[in-house]
Length: 248
Image (cartoon, rainbow, N blue to C red; front, top):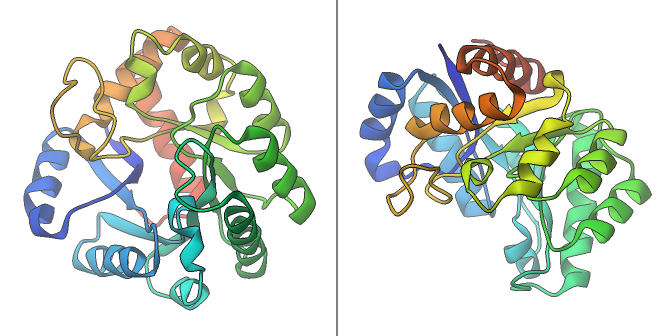
């Protein structure tokens, strides 16, 4: 089996060890995600250091109050494969909602101009997320990372042509809505991620998360679909290669 981690946040200091552990677990590729200009540049630097890492450039909604100047220039860097992460997060409101919406809309416009995928983070903000997407226009390749909604939100995202990416949350006993959402996701729109170092899947809760844990997320999805883990591995590999247009 070979896996792609659709969304992770790698630490430069432990990159070599992280990549070795991932390889041992069958995780052959990973998308290192930018959350502001500095983190996006750092992701680009890590991608330059390994042919198994690709980068994104974007401003997380938590950082929206700082604006987005410099992000579009980074999209031209080698091995940058998506715009984001971007979106709306009203759970913490580290940035005001209006600032979040402005920056989110700007990222959507970038994705259109650059003809690149859009990686969305949304939390406690589904209605506004869909409203901004509908106003600016949903990019052809859009993914809701770390999907935390239920079947209604999944249906709304899928109706807009989006992919859904599931994290270790799908393995949590309390996450029945997330598993119900996964169940209605067509296999050809499914992606898998760790969102490491956060959201460590069962049975490793309480430990730091790493891309090596992608197979545990895949196992949880396999149980949802009634499939073998190798089927999930192959499907999500193919989907990620298509979505990001990876040369692997």
